[in-house]
Structure formats: C-alpha cells, structure tokens
Length: 500
Image 1 (cartoon, rainbow, N blue to C red):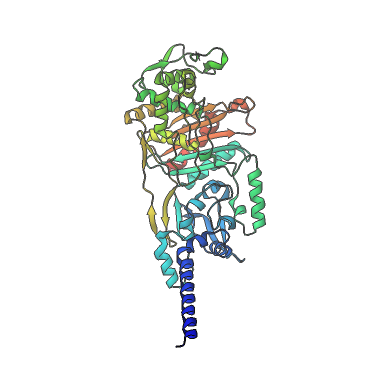
Image 2 (cartoon, helix red, strand yellow):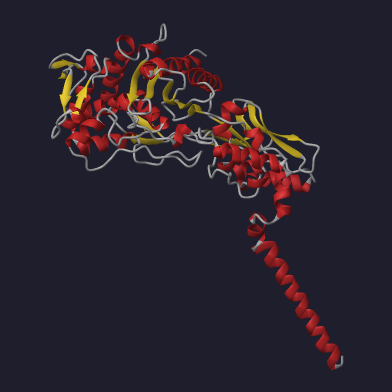
C-alpha cells in the first residue's frame, strides 16, 4: 500500500472512531440531559403523545389519558375536576418534559411524574416487554389514599358554606396511619382547561387563574397559614397535662377577664366574649366546653414559652413532613416570647399560625393515643396493568403526648361536643371529640377566621378533621364562628367515613 492510500486509510479510520465516540457520547452519556432539555421539541412531543398512567381514588380514575384525534394522540382528562384539582394538578405541553407546573406548585401529576410517564425504574421490565413486543409504552398508575365519600362531603360542605367565591380548606386524616382521606381547597379551578391541546387556550386560562385575586391555584389545605385561634387550646391543654400542671378533673383558672402581665388597657386584656367561665377557679371541662380565653392564656404562661414551643413542635409545628404535594407551608410557633406573648399564643393568636393539615394532625395525634403519624396521599403505585409495584408504609412522626394525656384530652373534647361550643358536630349514636376556633385576622377591616377540629368515634377513631374558613362572603361578621360554619362540614365528613 503506497503512502497516500495508507494516510487516507488512517484518516478515515480516525474519522470513523471519532464518529463512533460521538454517537456513544450522545446516545449514552448525554441521552438523559438531551431528552430532558426543554428545547428538545421532539422529546416533548413524544412525551406528551404517549398514554399516561391514571390517578385513582378507590378504583375510579380521576385523571386519565384518552385517545385524541389531533397531533398529540392522547388527551389528559380529569373526571371530577373541581373536587380534586388541588390534589391532581394538571399535565400539559408546557410541563410535559420538566414536570414543573406554571404556578411552581407540584401536585400528584408532578410529584409522581416518573411513574405516570413510565420512566420510573420500577417499570423497567414493563418497558422492556413493550419494546420487545413492539407495543406502545404506557405509564404506571397512582392510587391515592382519598376516600371518595369523604372528599365529596368535604367539597360539597365547604362549597355550600362558602359559595363559589369563598376561601377555605378541609383536611381529613386516618389517625392510626396518617392517610389523607380528604383534602379540599376553595376557590378551586378546572384542570381540564390547563390540559388542553390548544396551547393558546392553556396560556389564557393560566394567566386568568394567576391574576384571580382569590388565588384559586393556591392549595389552602397545605399552603395557607393562619392563626388557629381556639383550636390551638387543645395544644395548650396538652402541654399543661403533659407537664403535670393539671389533670382533666382539676379546677383551672377562670374568670371573665384577664390582664396579661406587663400590659395595661385593652391591648393586654383577655376576655371570654360573654361565655360562662366563672369568677376564679372552674372545672377543666367547663373551660374547654366554653373555650375560655382567660383559662388558656393563664395556662400557657404557667407552662412557659419554651415548653409551649416544645409541645407545639411535637405535634409538627415548625417542621416539613408532607412530600406528596409541594410546597408545604410550615405551621409556625414562635421562639423567645415574653409572658404577654406566651399568653396570646396559648389561645392561638400572637404569631402562631397553622395550616389545616397541621391542625388535623394535632387532633389525629390525640385520637391515635398521642402518636402523630406522618401524613401521606399516595397509597400505592401500580403497573399499567394495575398490579401493585409499591405501597406506602405508615410512619410515626413523633410521640407528641402520652397515652394518658391523649385519653384525658379526648374526654375533654367529647364533653365540648356534648355540652359546649362544638355541639354542631354531634352524630347520633357516635361519640365525637371536637373543638371550635375563631381567630382574629389582625386587620379590623377583615372578618375573623373560623376553625373546627374533631375526630370520631372517640373510643375508636377512624377519622380526624380540620376545617378552616378564611373568607365567607355573604355571612354576617357576627355569625362567623367555628362551630356554626365548620361543625356541620366536619360532621358530614366523619359520617361519610364511619357509616360505611
């Protein structure tokens, strides 16, 4: 072989090796990053055009992919959009590749995207079989913990009280596991509008929802923190019993009013708004039944700021614990409070703030004998053929209180439903434990917030509920109260669960 031919042969060999190296680099080392690049329109088109797994409540799909006659082949459809919008979220062309929604919130469509799209490693065998059989690859299914009857009761009850323009949320938990049985936030929205194949319509709908002053995209169940008001007295009572200051049969401080230490005048005056709280010492049950501010403000000061914070944090305050929907706002209990601030915190005011999920966890922990379970929404994940791949195991978050303290609190809360402010949650033939709450917004031009927490049956709890009413158009300011507005909603949810 003469030299020119040999040189050309070596050059061609080097070019071939370079080409092979580049193909290997692109197909193996950079495949994932190129596939995930939002500028890769072919990858987005392919992802958006394949059948996506279903989101299930019970055995019914609340989100599924239906065949479409346009270029994208499959249309994502939500069968009960308004009731489940804040749980499912939506899936459209704009988040098909990245899994991120336009509002920067991650709901089940996003947090479970790998599984629903079929990219999850647990579906490797399924993908391999599809490849070898030349079948179209499909995504896996996600089964949620939600109880459809409880979810419907929560949505219908909240909608009836608030109307279409009201603001509020409901969370129901299974105390012994932490399963989320219901989660509703109002106002709501239709995710079908955001899943349309008409991208101009999607953009217009997204802009409309983003600009809505009612913030319908906000999941108030986990993302809105408000003063919990008198529902927080349950935590104050837990701290007092747990630290040996009182027991359920003891007399506690009462009185029609109480001047906070180091204060003068109306700004530091705590009163009971006319409720029967005695003149000096009253039974603990009476204080809880009548939601006596004077009792629980004094009680919090006796417990002390540090121990109050420790008790609140044992129930989940100042923590992140919910992973199936993101982001989660942390319920807040302040540090380094003086006595007046501690007294205010004891009645759920000052700088105390909670989400409905957090207050549901408080009563669920009491219902579960003092053990707070980590809440979860995804029950199991399945193959495209609905075979179970993995299931969530219940996990204890903390031992918030002793079983003895939980038992005493249960008795006090049952008495509050039977004889006190929480009576709207009464269920014939069933013992219900509950507590009302009304919290000042801090703005004299805005009405107060109404809360209600409960669990039932008290002797063998199946469900714990928290109801938060942030804004109730059409309801007179003087009628905004946790028992009046939240009690019937909680009752309907509890009945939906325990009467099956």
